[in-house]
Structures are given as C-alpha cells and as structure tokens.
Length: 122
Image 1 (spheres, rainbow, N blue to C red):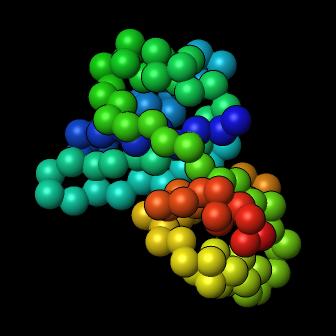
Image 2 (image 1 turned 90 degrees about the vertical axis):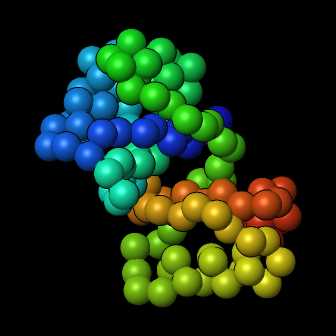
C-alpha cells in the first residue's frame, strides 16, 4: 500500500532535488509528490510504495521525515472535472480532507479524517 511521507526541507536551492536524488539512489520510485515553501522552510509530500525504504534513504541523506500517513489513491479519467467529481463524492460522505495532490498517471491522492468512509463513497 502506498504511503505519503512529509519531509521537511531547508528553504534553499537544491533541497528538493537532493531529497529526490536520495530516493532515486535507493531505488525508491516517486509515485506522486507536492512541495511547498514558506516561513523559512519547505515541506515535501511524497507518495511511495516502500515507506520504510524511503524513510531510511531520506534520513541517511540528512532529511527529516516528520510524518507518514495512509492515503487513498484514486484512478482518475484524464478529463476536465474528474477530480471535482471524486472530491464531491468524498465531501458528500462527510469526510474532511487534510491533503490532496495528483500522483503519476492521473491519480488523485487524498488523506482525511476517515479514509474508509471516503473509500466507500467512491
């Protein structure tokens, strides 16, 4: 099962490239990701199949993995409105999301307060 890791990065050129290089060097494929910066640091959300291997590779390279979470990965049609359709169904089930980004191959990655209810909504 894929996991989302939150990696804290320094707010400097090359920090994101270094984290991706650490994963690639360890043979960890990035299934999806999102990076944002602010207040002097950056946060890298990365979707991987091998969470333990990814954590080891990142920590060995000096990166802090601040959290790991289960996520729901949903195959989407590559068309306008596809993400909205899925997110509307999750919202109608009363699930409050705290994370959403697109993964490789048009997949929507979400996490929230009740993944089982979100899964059932789809």
